[in-house]
Length: 236
Image (cartoon, rainbow, N blue to C red; front, side):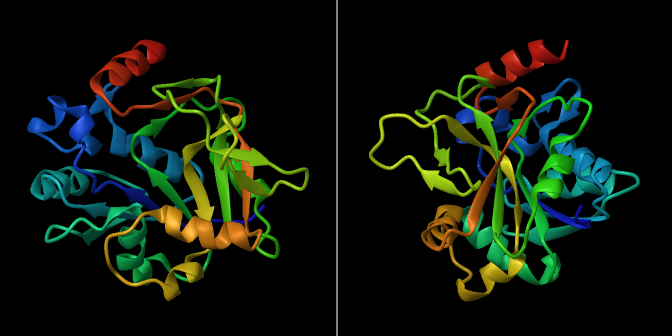
């Protein structure tokens, strides 16, 4: 199993769908089960052996700095400051590129949470990583085993584990669960400007370099206050 010592938490979003909770704080600091969404991600990183975590910040940047300064123990936090301009998921990764190093890294959205079973989902991702075959390994949830998601699914999986977008199909069985392992070298060809991570995926998908790992845990997308309340109920 590959060892991954670096992770990035994508925490710079405005959280407009989470209003009114985000009128006074960033989405990353909204709590579920008495823990900020950001801390769910960082604690999950720590449990998987991550020693260094990059967090990008924009909305309520001072509150984010104060919160991160108050954390104790691993992972060691490095901040990628997007206060002047939010760069979206792809651009945020490019800006943080020099802090990510040269080895595969975890990348996680802060609005995706779950309760691990006997084997953690991040450990299952690590066990599935094969750098000769892939540049991105996506954690996928079964569409019917999700909370806070109302879409038609994102991906199919081929028999060899490669991911394929839904495209013109009406529905797909798997949803991107907000976490992946990424080869940071793929970022080097992209400019530091606002753009979605989908742009990077599309390039990798065209070359068969995106694979999927289906999670066992029940996945919760905490994107609005109603989903936050529903996720809270599942933790009690």
